[in-house]
Length: 405
Image 1: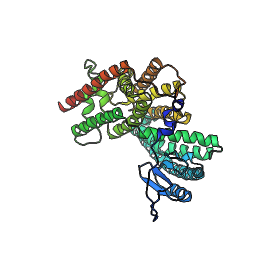
Image 2: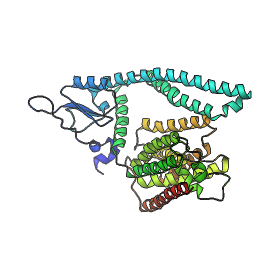
Image 3: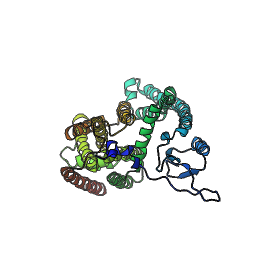
Image 4: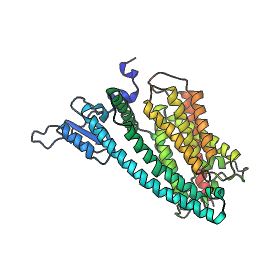
């Protein structure tokens, strides 16, 4: 086995391209020996490490990768010792901003939440009825996302403090390398799935007369309405639909990240298999345990999350430990949002999809201590091809049902 195969692909020396050759302004035309690439892809070159450190602190966008004279290739900025103190200075500054913004927005949305609860209670005299109002759930979710989460993240970063040893910085560098590698991978299947979401979303927007609320017509035309159980095709069309623009945006963002991660680590066939299978299981769960109409790709997306939770626990050398913890945070966030928005969030579909994705990972992937990604098997391609056909037919079927009104 080659030496580089003993490390996961994102940790190998050739994981990133050679550092750019950016001409400096000097008369000799020498190349910048220091520099970084920001998260928007722009390159910034400097002649001295002090200039690089100053630019990193002042930059308003994230630092993706960096270069120095010691390496011919791009590196995670945490791998360059001279930058470490400035990286912490930058992170601490951002954490303080998160803390302050979290305090302000938490107070704002808490006032909004209390107002909605008090207003509803004044009319009904029943606290439980007030808590069941969708506006209360929405206010609580906004409080969580824009207030409490930034508040907690800022507090956690400041409480933890700067990495205290070279081993701590090594863990930081591993996480940074993994994120940068993941961002650079080509993921055509993920892009194709996002394209499907865009096409159906635009169709819904047109059907709903450009209204941001898509539940007036679309849900009844092709959503999973529980009173129309004989129309089995709704199990196929409902996952392509969304209740409103915010619902679509949240699912699109989650799909983009989770599907990319599955495609890069477990390979593309499993993105399709898990997404399609979990969406179906989520639909069956919501049909059996809830009475409200159901739409959305959340069951399939939660399946991807559940799959990654198990897959990465079975392949511990493939992904840095801090990065795996983010998936658990995603589950906790989803559970909290589900509890706060129980009036309109389909928790049955979420749980069904999550369990389906976890079960698939347990059945298909045995535990492995290899840092290498699994190979694509012939049967994986075959099943994924069938799944792709089902998704394509489902998209067309959904659009025809919407346009046929």
